[in-house]
Image 1 (cartoon, rainbow, N blue to C red):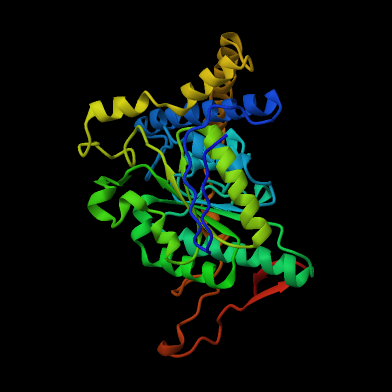
Image 2 (cartoon, rainbow, N blue to C red):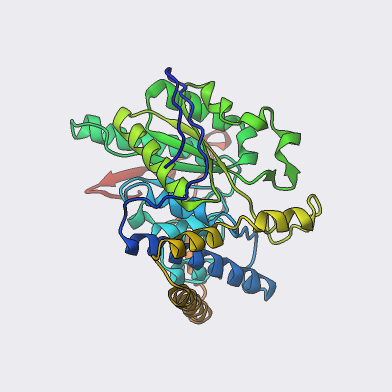
Length: 383
């Protein structure tokens, strides 16, 4: 399906081209991927509208153009494989299985959201689907991803006395590659044989700066992983078939060998970095040129060529996703806002200050009333 070369050594490199041959999968699976991509696109378009209507507050980073990455990567691994990502996270949440209702209500800051409206756009979290959140601090999810992968390996190999059976996908943007925590995480992953795949969604612009202006070796980004002994791959993120094929092979290798990997996922976002981005750092002609390579349209043409779908079935998919997002909008509008009491729930440690259960820091006179964390019968809490 793809031309792949893998030289010997711990930093083996794989360079991949576009794929046009269909994988040996049921037509229902391929159609499901197409629907998921359309759902993400429709969801994000309506998020933009809702933001302009002031129904969504704070920052909002839409995923339009990068749908093939989330769908292809999620399809390439198992549900038990953890996923963690940055703040452009709606697409990952929907691809992983979060309901449109829970996702949109969280955008609206409503109780019906996945985090009861207290996380918002940048913090989608779905424990039943092993989605360990979007994270607002640039690169902060990377050491967390390495930690999750270490925990799953420890559970599989030490606690259960077996072999490693899981791999963690840790997504980050190309701008995060310049954060020191990313290199600390890769260093530990390489040293400890941690089964984590660091996936750089390289859309060419860290916020509003072209990657070559702010990142060394941007023309060969995988060298960042090679320096830490990670297996490498460069993947066409605008082709869902290429993403699935290459990520499936890579994830299986990482799972079997319990080793980390680094992926330069080439993609492009059609909209701004966030809703407040005027996009003055690139031309409209550039955007239009990339839109001709749209992953959804490319996948539709491939499925049409192989008689997997018809024009009528594509229209039906689009209608069903529009209806699903309309339902999510209605649910979000009708869902109540969190009660003020929610300010004091789901808080790991209470803040210092004149509030019940708080205490002074030790250097200010002691912490006699300090909360202590404990876990009993699988339930965690503060005493």
